[in-house]
Image 1 (cartoon, helix red, strand yellow):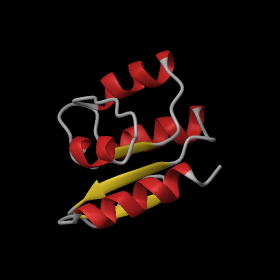
Image 2: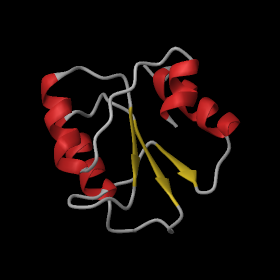
Image 3: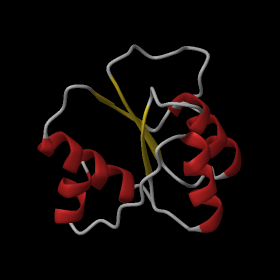
Image 4: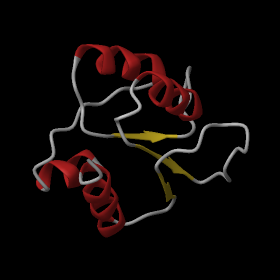
Length: 99
């Protein structure tokens, strides 16, 4: 993913899990967040909840092979696994052009 997004001139910040992503979000302004639903530690659904409550202007998408959780706040977009480079590029473009 990083290679594809960097080739499209996106600056990519990476986090191994949700708490690290929150630390990054507190330290840097971002245009969008793309997260996996299943991560070690704090998962993607919890990260979406944090972003929706604390950074509502930041669009967020979840990458997942799992069905939606009706108890989780809905992300702005879902990218189902498996996906190709074109789908990833389209998603990144749509997230960053929402503003």
